[in-house]
Length: 115
Image (cartoon, rainbow, N blue to C red):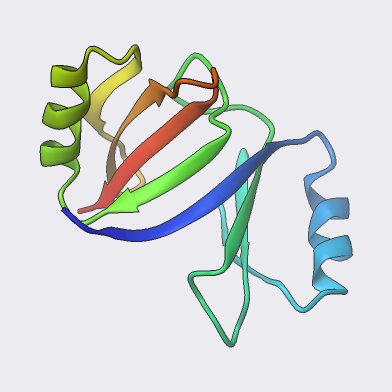
């Protein structure tokens, strides 16, 4: 299993203002579903940050997202470790397969793969 990217998720009620502010630093909007917006660097597209008002299908907003090349393998490893799963592995309508797990620091990690 390989990590493809890691990005912070910031819970925010000022998503558009955040886009404008981080645009000053050169980040551009690459995704916007209304409840989550992702900005990325045009020169390094995996350098990203997301802003979320809430999570559409999960009970909490994750602190960070980790995209892996095999989310099913990641889920098996994490489950075997006994870590707390907050959102079970499932396919989402926007094209990702994901689960949420709590890390040892109490942070919520969204582990995902694109379908």
